[in-house]
Amino acid sequence: MAHIVAKKALAKLAETCYRQTHFTKQEVEGLLHVFRDLQTSKKGKDEMKMDRATFREVLHYTFAMTDDILMDRVFRAFDQDNDSYVSAQEWVQGLSVFLRGTMEEKMKYCFEVYDLNSDGYISREEMFSMLKNTLAKQPTEEDPDEGIKDLVEITLKKMDHDHDSRLSYSDYKTSVETEPLLLEVFGPCLPAAKQVHAFTATFSDTCTEWY
Image (cartoon, rainbow, N blue to C red; front, side, top):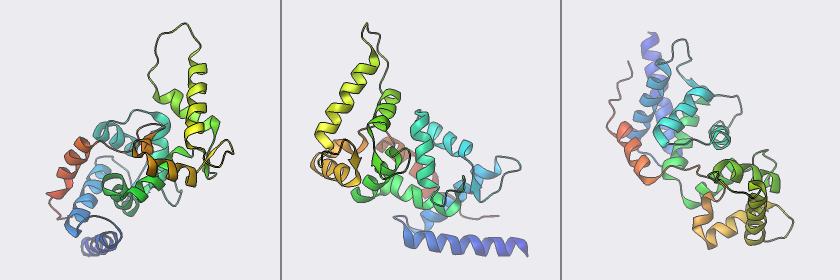
């Protein structure tokens, strides 16, 4: 009986996610299957909630992300209800943007990732923190922090359209629409096309029998 109830619940969840995302119904079922497999590989874990550590493993091993700050922020972007877990529904909805989002969706997502304290702005301090963490450390006699501070000022000069010494979403959006390469200006938080293709193959052809 429990088996039937669980299967019906997952079918209903798949239908809900399908209507809210850029995936086909079969792909949603495949993603839920992948989610469940990731969870059942962790003994004692709730099958329908993914913790931060498991999510970071996915980002690192599947999407080659290495930046600790940005990986934590990507987790927060997926965890829409802020309960410190990514639910099955948040997993599918987040991946819809991550893998197939429109430019508007990707801009909102990237801005949310870069807004480290979630106050609606990307401050000088946040820019410095992300750029320092992202840029490769080069041996030099000069103070590396000074070079990063200079880069922050150059970025502000280019993107801070209302001249308030911080980036609002409007500043960021205007800049990215003018120059799309600025989408991931403060570090990679979206997967490369090669990784998207490889991961898509894992759920597009996945068997969708739950139990």
